[in-house]
Image (cartoon, rainbow, N blue to C red; front, top):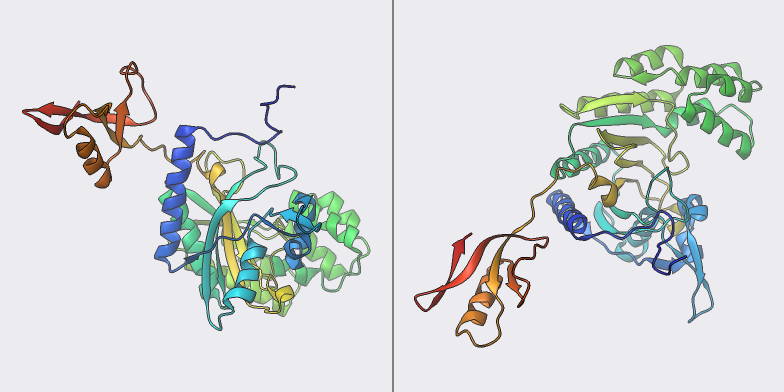
Length: 384
């Protein structure tokens, strides 16, 4: 095997795509800043016990491990940034009120989380800590939609659910972790026959409610139907009421409900959502409420947020034209005033590409629509 062949599901990002990703990164961070989010930069590596504490336990199999040559302790390469941001909120900021934090950086997965996915996503995310109300849930959804709008990703469909619905239905059932895992998988696959077999020993209300969930997928009428067919429960009633409120406040966004959707079940404690656009094989954005995320750090603060992979987003975002640039002669020091003219243009934010001797006909990533030429003893910019 050639030494330069990269590992499976790992790839270089070449100039045109890298430029687009970087422009998206700036746009998304600016969008989050417009909502009042502060940027944080957690480290790529942490001691393993810190990285996999609390909700991070669910990431164990996705986390690369290595030995620190300085301390001899085991380190982990983060597979998700949310637990780190919860640690920052709990231990470093330690604010009494609301904290809005955003981030953008690489994460690394031991395995791709779905076919054709990369193992080194560039993860962007935003989190709100300190507010338990629906207002924070709604803000998170609106920010996620605005981020997709900034990327010009196309028409968006929001898939809403709530982890408490399944939790309420399972409250009276006796099952071990392995059986519950199989129940969750059957619900996610909408496999009624498998679900019927797995829940045979459950209380009748729980069993019938779980089987009904498989059919509860669609528009707002699903919530009305859920109130009719699911067994009464304060937790379930609150979850359905919250979903109604959120859908009403999302304006013109297309919203569907999948009450059996359990992706991220171990992570979320309330509302969860996915945002889909045409051309993407799965949700571009995933998020929701995860109030227990900071408990292990000593501050069980309400938390809600979302994340996305910029490398995936760039595949469906509107293509952007290369940045306009100015072509200039190579500055060998002989042409009076050329270096100063180039420096002045760059100081004003222009891109100036100096043509090296012998490469006058080459084309690069920049679109040179002007050139720097000498006229009447002065260097001036003219359109090409």
